[in-house]
Image 1 (cartoon, helix red, strand yellow):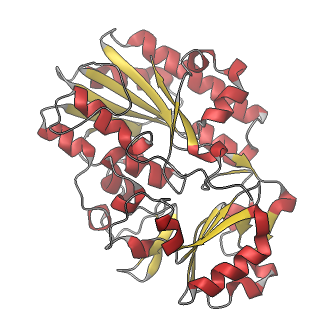
Image 2 (cartoon, one colour; image 1 turned 60 degrees about the vertical axis):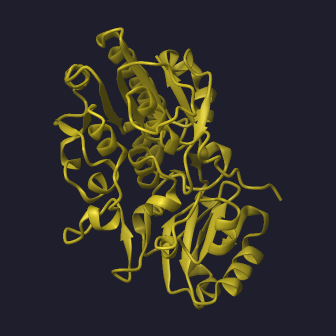
Length: 369
C-alpha cells in the first residue's frame, strides 16, 4: 500500500507563505523559508482549486502560469479551502489553528461546524482567536488589503482565517477590469503593502463539471488571463505571488461508497464530518472503528486514529486544546474514491473532490511574476 504524502510543515507549505513574505516586510522574528524575492509590496493571488499537477497536465491552457511553474509547495491536511486559507492567513499548521476541515467537530457546541455555512450566532474569533498573520503585519507597519467577493466580508470563516486587512469588496466577480483596479489600488496603499486576492471559479467548475472538462479548462484559461492582466497593470516593484489552496481528483460514480448502503460501518460512530475524500468520524471506540473501515476500504484508503495521524505528522504540531476537533478516526482516500452520505446531498452531485493526502490534492504551485 502506498503511503500518504505528509506535508513538510515549517519548510514548504501554505502555512509558510506569509511568514516568508513577512521576513521581507520587517515582521520581527520572521524567516523566509521559501526563498521568495525581496520586495516592499506584494500581491498574493490565491486561485481556489489550482493544483500543481493539474496545471502541468493542462499547460497549454495557461501560458502565463505555466511559464512561471518552476516550483510547488503543499497545502496542509486536510487539503481543503477552509483549512488552507486559515493556514495562509495565520501562518500556522492545521493542528495549531484548529480549522480542521470543511466541516469538523466543534466540542464547545457539541456539533459539527460547517465552515461554509457558518452559524450566525458563532463568532469566528471564538473558534480561532490567535493573531492572524495579517494582524502581525499590521503591527509591523505594513498596509494589508483583501480583494474578495463582497459577501465574504465579516463572515465567520473570514474572521477566523483572514481578519485584519482592509476589505475591498468585489461586487461582480466577472468584472475582471474592476478587480484588477482594486488590486492596483491595494498595492498603492502604502510604502510596504501585502494584498490578498481571491479567485474561485476554477474550483467551482471542477466540483460541478470535473477536472479537465471544457468548463474547467475555460476557467483555467480565464484565471491565467487574469494573472496576465494583473501583472500588466501592477507597477514593476510589486511582486506578484500566485498559489492554490488544493488540487483535485475526479471521482467516478462507481467509486462512491454511500454509508447508508453499509450501516455496519457506522456502528458506534457518533458524528460524521469532513468531506468525501477525507472523512472524520467521532467515536468512543476509535480502534475498533478504524479497523472496521480499513478492512472495508483496504488499499483504497489510509485509515488512522487521531493519535496515529498526529504521530505521523498529518496536521503539524497539534495544540492539546484543539486536538478534539479532529476526528477520532480519519478516513483519507488513497485512490479515486469517496465516502458519501444521503444526509449531505450536495456532495452527491460533485464530480471533482479533494481533501486527502495524495500528491494530486496536496501539491499547489508557488509562482512569482
